[in-house]
Image 1 (tube, rainbow, N blue to C red):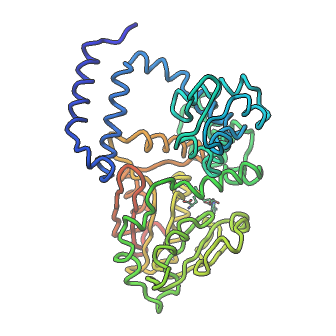
Image 2: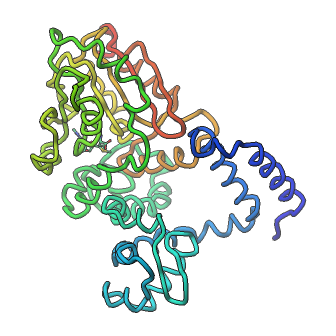
Image 3: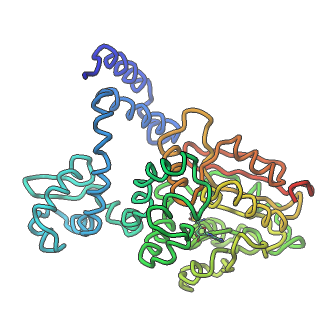
Length: 408
Ligand SMILES: C[S@@+](CC[C@H](N)C(=O)[O-])C[C@H]1O[C@@H](n2cnc3c(N)ncnc32)[C@H](O)[C@@H]1O
């Protein structure tokens, strides 16, 4: 089988023409232009590789992640990043305890895909990606391989269960692969080192992305109309993990002169909050253990914030979480703020579509489209639903409590 050079050539020319039309000066300044350039660059690589090569290569792509995982386990990214100049495979073997030949073979693949530099034979040096891979939270994300080792079993699970998208948190890919009846959160809790990796990675999943309050009108839509006679809380971060969103919020709006009134409340399961040291949170942030499948104890807050929560759960479970929050909201005042991906109906980006399958694996959850978010919230008794999109990453879905309805 061979690729068709004529079709390939036409593709390549049309992509290069589009790339040439982009203003160079805007690429790094304007996020939308950057995304368009990246999309075209990916298409160009695909067109140059050709369909048959791409289809064949895909079979072996997972070896890149496996090589990265081995390098993380041996601390190779850290060791290479710690050196100003170059380091040999032999030195890496001595420092890591790994076999020199194994190290050279793993690093050769990682150098081919730009995760490390190879200035000479069996000699390595760091680039920016090597240094990113060396950071503790990113390394934790790679060590946290429950999802990928469970997803590998998905085809067998789906074959045996009749190809239905999993929606029960206690009966999905993770449970099948690990022979557990725990939902994924409880399963992780039962495996301390995995749980630690998960929390460390989740605490930093923003990567280099902007925080929501940097692009959503927090002042106009949340802070300004705070009314202490309705409730003493400005914002509750429901399932807020280690509190990175509230910390970022407080460092933006809380440093003198403080730009907001009211309390910031961090809610999560007790064992998650217990893992936060006293000095890790600002004085303005209060910890409150809470299971979001039970009644929401903070009543009349101005905002109830859920970041990467509902995508962990299928609609049936989202309804329970949403009802508990809705019942504590004051109509016309409290806002529900959901920070999640908003998938387009067609043409989802790779990141968006991939995350949807990650969520299917994680807990029988899903990423949702505009139409799915709107339906979910309407069915759960919310009104004034507004969707604020931010490029191809996350958006904010804002809603208010509706009148009592048949959803009670
Ligand atoms: C995907 S993490 C998101 C954490 C944080 N909001 C963020 O964006 O980084 C999901 C969070 O939900 C919490 N969680 C899971 N089940 C919960 C429950 N029943 N009640 C409260 N929090 C829960 C987990 O402990 C975890 O911190």
